Image 1: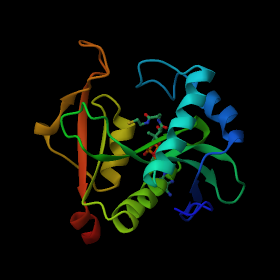
Image 2: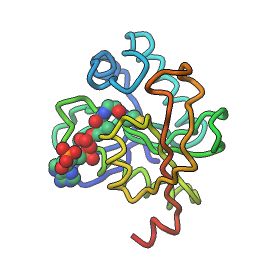
Image 3: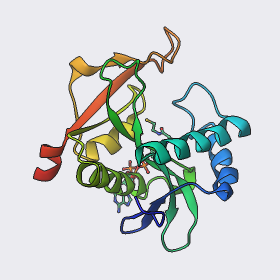
Image 4: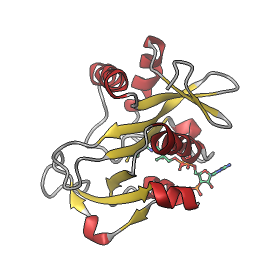
Length: 185
Ligand SMILES: CC(C)(COP(=O)(O)OP(=O)(O)OC[C@H]1O[C@@H](n2cnc3c(N)ncnc32)[C@H](O)[C@@H]1OP(=O)(O)O)[C@@H](O)C(=O)NCCC(=O)NCCS
């Protein structure tokens, strides 16, 4: 992806900048945004995530990109592609994922940005399949996956290895989308 980013109708998905760290940390400290994660993030953990995303972008050519509104340049969160951890049962895989600050929910931005990320993954990277996964109980995120045309097979459901056994967030659903199905849409 060019430094100028990947453009959709209303969004720009682009490399991270130092100036993103403050609004990103505020978003990661919001308990509503982080409802389906084991905890909110400290400023240091949030900054560390930005650094890891940038390392992934430099190494692999993609990452969960910083997202801004094209019209105003306002930072709204991240959307992008990420290598799934080696310890999940469907590894190796590339996932599409998102996290937006609350004022930007309910406006279709996650779906629009994810469509741009999928296009990049299938056309520019030539991937055969892109997956997405979340806690069974994260219905809002699952609706994004369904809007994207991704399909869940119950036999793919799994327990997330990073979440403590018995925790409500441990059971996960996996959604898949093949390049062939993407092109048919
Ligand atoms: C998951 C998350 C990104 C979803 O945000 P979202 O706003 O519900 O999803 P979208 O951007 O696709 O928007 C869809 C909503 O916008 C509405 N909408 C408004 N205008 C729209 C448009 N032009 N196009 C599509 N949807 C539109 C839809 O009706 C839908 O609202 P509804 O669910 O109340 O019916 C957001 O809740 C979030 O950041 N959550 C915290 C982090 C998280 O859980 N990440 C995923 C971890 S796996």
